[in-house]
Amino acid sequence: MLPRARGKPARAAGSAHPRTTDVQLFLFDTRWREAPFSRDADAQVLLRPVGDGTKTFGEATKAADGRIGIRLTKIERPFLDQFAKATSLAVAHDGQVVAEIPTPGTARALAALRECEASALKDWGLDSATMMSLRSYPKPTGGSAVWIVNEDYPDEAIRNNEAGTVVALLKVGADGVATGCAIVDSSGSKTLDNQTCAIFGRRARYDPAIDATGKPVIGLAAVRIRWVMP
Image (cartoon, rainbow, N blue to C red; front, side):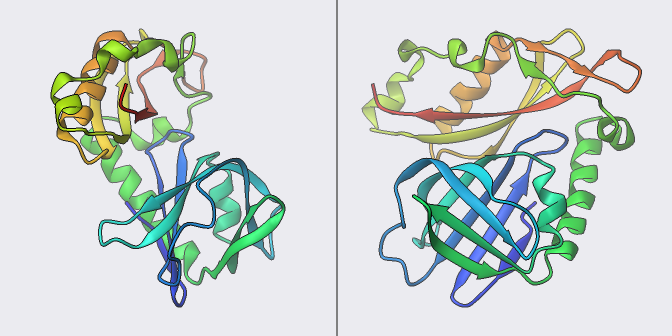
């Protein structure tokens, strides 16, 4: 589920997790020997010629083939509607544009993403029309940070010096309990990925999704956990 917009020599890719508010963008440039910045909680995405600057969390990342890039997260889904109309995308750090690429064909890519999203919902046993009409999505009760403690770091991962960021998709019941978990962005460690789903399956509690009539229903929630060696 990766809509792609290509420039030369830069490339952008993005993903939206089905019927959640989580959108991520990845930018790679073969000219970069290092990322334009390591971490920035106040980075901005600029869509031209449409849209105002969108605040995002940015951090350095690396593609599987070794290319250097930046990952932008904490972007709300309404951003996609503007993205479909844009002809270029830029990223600003400390008030300065550090990357800009053309984004031809974005509307077609996002249409394909939505088709993929509907298919993914069907695989999860969810009705696309119902999910698209939700009044609100599941929200973690008390915040998800309280669900993981240092002692949860698997011994095997510590022995192997494994760390990384996991993005998981949870199926949350009308009672707020997670009933399913799928890894959509691996940490690179199967041990950490499995531990993420195990913890959220046992401990996650949500205010459930609310449908158009005001009734609690099944919904999906994306979680992002950065495992750092204790």
